[in-house]
Amino acid sequence: MIKLRTLAAASAVALVLCGSAAPASAQLTVFDPTNFSQNVLTAARELQQINNQITMLTNQAASLVNQARNLANLPMSTLAQLQSSITQTQSLLSQAQNIAFNVQRVEQAFSTSYGAAAGTGSTATMVANAQARWQNSVGAFEDSLKVQAGVVGNIPINSSAMTSLVTASQSATGALQAAQAGNQLLALQSQQLSDLVAVLSAKSRADALEQARAASAEAQGQQNYKTFSTRTGYQPGNVTMFSGN
Figure 1: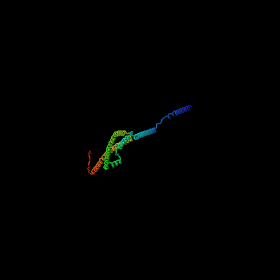
Figure 2: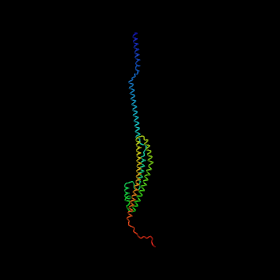
Figure 3: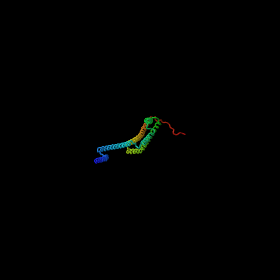
Figure 4: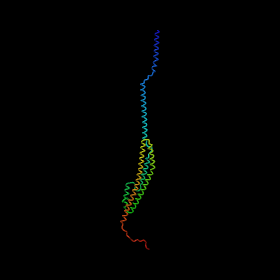
């Protein structure tokens, strides 16, 4: 009996020990260095990928900003101002008196009043043509002075436009703004060249008409001398100066 009780008690103690040991073994954590290293490497790779994506997005955003700057229009334009100056100069040229800047008008005038035509016709006709040629020369000089005055009046306007365009070009935020500023500077230069051509044309016209007038006057003088030298001699006659009572 004693042996049976002893065996039963030993079995009970063993069962208790077994029951109490099981939960203790379940709470133990096993550290795996290899698995931990792999997890750390995986997390590092993922973090690197995220950093790469952030860098790529940042570069794309910067590229879009640069593209927006390069595509931005110049916030100013001098085109209307330049066109107004050109229109004014053209208007002065179109006001040319008597003989305009027209090939047909020039040909017609020289065929009727200049050159060999200056010494033809009656005395009254030659005098009228000489008067017309003098008026043409005076009008041409007046036209030349008007064009010169108009071009000089454009200088302050062009100077203001040039200053604005140079400032805009230096402060351009993108390639398009710089290119547009450069194009407008070229347009300003073209306008100034047009003014120069207008001045030279008006001046050359006045000089040419004056030279033509001088040549025509010489031709008319030759014709007058020829007419005078071919007249018949003087025929004397009786002249009554005082009537008798």
